[in-house]
Image 1 (tube, rainbow, N blue to C red):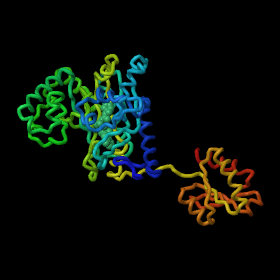
Image 2: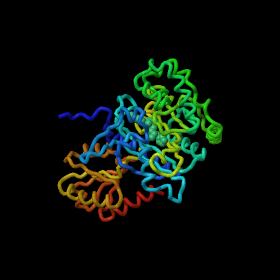
Image 3: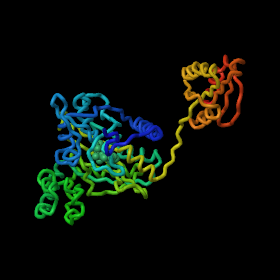
Image 4: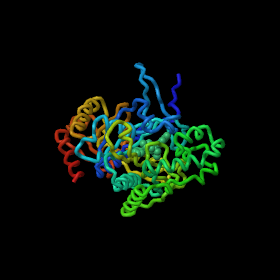
Length: 427
Ligand code: HAM
């Protein structure tokens, strides 16, 4: 039996989960400010959703999907990304008919890609992503980018680079496509098999090839920015104007084509420039995908979004040595000495929890000193000490673990007293 975790996956242990939850809270808070609402779609979809959505010529579809047949013979795939599923759901649930347009959605959950695992690259990873559907206003492009940046800034990251590009509209893309074919065709024999098959199907993908990255034709390839028609140029200029207005710094990189097929007009990525961050520097990526809703059988609906993985965000926090202070204190820890006190602590513990306090006790029959150590390790605010003597007198000792102050409290008044303390604290 193989009792090891599968390659490219990781256990997130309780200590780490605290950081994850802290990040998730920040992310949810920010999305709420921008009025994005959470959507939860299935972890698996019909394989076609990704073939059609992400694109047949992409690495994701060709090499990285976890696809399988279920017992009913259906072709299914563990989702490698969230956009295709969200668009499927948008169409299936006729969200285009909802009065609150544009529809602004976010998701947070595991994605699966059969990639070569390395630092910052997993086979199961958690993506947070947003999708805004129903508006072709360049201001929403700027909003989506600003939201992504706000997340990184809020968790304390400083070494960030925003890179943007425009892939233009369909007309511009077709012209660029032709230019790319003419550029690569005479020497396509020098490229990898994948690129050879991409030449006619989707030459833009060649620019994203990991194998032929260094080929000289890559550097001289026609730039999309030279093929943007007037409308696309104006659109891109507006996006940049809004980013300038927001005081967002960026660089324009015409080689930023992204690894998924659905993009047009604006694309962007945020990179970490933190020294010590791994070889993969991209923290998040996104862009516009006008036309995708139609691809899924819906009415003409523009869309834009981005996604980031929490794993890479955490890696960037580690590289920048961001310190996070968690509020993970336990309200009460009960130290019970002797059988009667232990019996009594069962009820006291329940009373505390029923009154909204977090509380725990010793279950290993340890000596007083060891129990107090536990209280310390668990970061308890108060320790309640119950011995036989105290029980007979109808009282307990309560120790404030921060100040060291200790006082006796009558059992009958105990819950009242601790509630007063907690009210005082909340004020
Ligand atoms: P993507 O560039 O394929 O775009 O992935 C977005 C982000 O997911 C990456 O920037 C990275 O943070 C994270 N990511 C991707 N693969 C891995 C991996 N193997 N391990 C860890 N993190 C990873 C999309 O997925 C698009 N759906 C984004 C989008 C949304 N575009 C428009 N809307």
